[in-house]
Image (cartoon, rainbow, N blue to C red; front, side):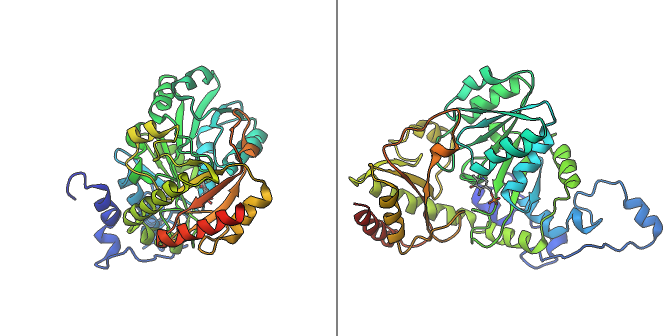
Length: 391
Ligand SMILES: *Cc1c(COP(=O)(O)O)cnc(C)c1O
């Protein structure tokens, strides 16, 4: 392979090994539970060995899963390896359980995806692991929160409900100085827009369900580890019995090949719509980091290579019923969870419910939009009808 292919080239080429593809373009679906050995000596020789990229037993994967995992590693310059999970939440659970034991403390960003919060306040708490929530704008100030029991900092930037941009390099530097591991939920940017490992993050997590899959039809997650960090993640994940079905891994690889071009369209359309919304009297604020009006814009400009298709806007006053009227009027936006697929979505979000360290101060209710691959003119016409209904 040539040196350092550009990201758009990497998504096309990554993870395609001739010994796995045997001439076809995409790594085929290898379905397996049992792997047959030539004789007892062969079977015994395989036991206890590192099974990375070696057929051993179906739970350890086949070339179909390895191909996607390797592709995601290749997209993160400087990374060691990637483990796949059957969902983004499973990936979050695995990396937290890799790093935390009873008595430890986790620092978790207050703007985190709500199931991440729920894991900290539920499962982790039950295991005797405490969590302190921190202000997403804390930056280097995280150093003041790091105590003797702190083992990990979990970041999500931008926050997927309220879109605060974190100063990841400053947080990473403070954590490294104290020997604390860092995890980033990088689902919004993907490694194409924010190469997390190159920014010093120890574990870069993706809900591949979103942009990697890209077609709203598969649940998938991943964690990519920095050098020296993979073995413990892999061992914990094996102990948890984590394995992704080969058909889902194959769909993930298939989606990945077009991720760069899809992201460019998501970015262009989302920005056009975000700018249009900024000019509307019914809209108090548009929460999109690529807009100069966004409080995290300078950080976003410094660290990111672009923006994706998910953002929110704040209505200028109005109640629950008016917001519902807006969303219910939309024809081209589905109403549903998740995002990152080819189709647009709109949902009401109520961030105050999920905050404990900070109190977001918004002028009215929020609507979160996932901008899909439709013509943005149709989406704008739709939102215009929605805002009329809101009024
Ligand atoms: C969707 C999402 C997840 C969880 O992914 P699933 O595949 O749905 O489990 C994690 N983080 C963020 C930011 C997400 O949007």
